[in-house]
Amino acid sequence: MLVSGKEILSVAKEQGFAVPAFNAGSGQLLNAVMTACEELQSPVMIAIHPDELSFLTDSFVSQVKYLANHSKVPVCIHLDHGASYEQVIHAIQLGFTSVMIDASHLPYDENVAISKKVVETAHVVGVSVEAELGTIGDTGNTVEGGVSEVIYTDPKVAQDFIEKTGVDSLAVAIGTAHGIYPKNIDPKLRLDILEEIEALTDLPLVLHGGSSNPDEEIRKAVTMGINKINISSDIKIVFASRLREILNSGNSEIREPNVLFPSCMEATKQVAIEKIKLFKSDNKAQYYGLRGINESVTL
Image (cartoon, rainbow, N blue to C red; front, side):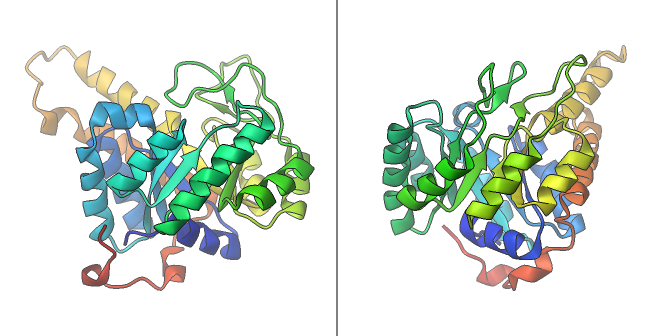
């Protein structure tokens, strides 16, 4: 069932779990994570970055909508790290049910202004809005990008930002980074900052850069108010690693997609299952009062 970001995250906040937001950069990744979510009865946000959308073309959104409208679990189609008002409007026109405007790199007043503008437009058509405050790190070559030095979210500023913009969810910077951390770096989340933000705000909070952080920290963050966690690198790396093994196996006759990709998709699915269980979103579809397939929303 296709739902908005506000619908899918409000239940997560009430029930104390985090919805996985998987960056589906291909049809194979999309099918793998959707299979995992349906098997575990987990709500899901299918996140698509503007660079991924440019590669996949707009027609990919129709595939996601088809799967959402024929699924018995709640599915939200989310624009990840929209960089401009124009990108957000394009996503809304395509049928995204949630959009992120990421103006976190701009001065605070400009971040407030563009986020508020997006909210005013998106809410008219029932689309939810996520914004970001503070900066997420960048460990390497990812579509999401980031910065070399994290600027942590100030809890009091977060409270002011929410009041001024009217956003539906907020991505907070508490020490994560996009991509997989190098072996010589031991990531640590500033859970003390998260605790302060949660105490001062009443919105679902979002964790970007959720790949490769210690499971115990992620598990703790979920209990402290994180209701959406973005996963991109973890599912893409395992897919690519398995594909590399197949291509390097010495059998140059392997070329059919239905031979190349199934085991890659299975490896991706297993990682998705691990994340779903870690985020405690398994068996949570029951809390959404789902309609039958024929009554699903069609955009």
